[in-house]
Length: 193
Image 1 (cartoon, rainbow, N blue to C red):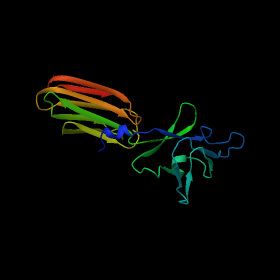
Image 2 (image 1 turned 180 degrees about the vertical axis):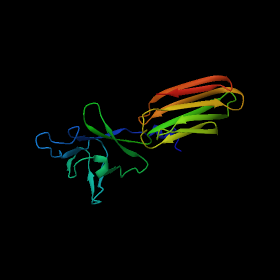
Image 3 (image 1 turned 135 degrees about the vertical axis):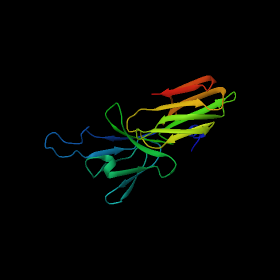
Image 4 (image 1 turned 45 degrees about the vertical axis):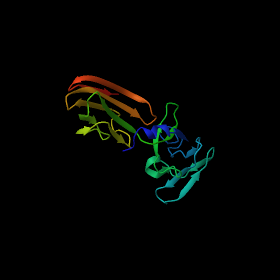
């Protein structure tokens, strides 16, 4: 698992795809072609899944995508300069398809002090399930994929008596979604979105 040190080198980069929302031309029911414009300072590798053709899209360069329909079903997007970073598909508030590049999708960070060295955890997983584990502190749970239900939750209880426990939910942009801290014997801290 990566630690918060990766946040120091974190860069948020976006790649916009311009299209109508349903990718269909209302005049003739034909799929709309999709254009891609790289608004980043990085070169993006676009791979056509059906032909395995690889195209490099340089910064400030535009290109049409020849496939129609679902973008993620037809293409893979990578950052060739850094295989540790992930390229994700998102839909922005301004009606554009966006690809963002970051080190992880979500982190749960659990820390202890004043004697809290071990904790019992319960958390929401990326597929909508529940994870449980007893861990030594500090501890980080990291996900590289979007959550199926967009719900995040972490609860931690001190296992070894008295102390202070803190939980944080960190999103892919390095922002704290929620945090909580508790002090006491078998104290519990809980955070959610």
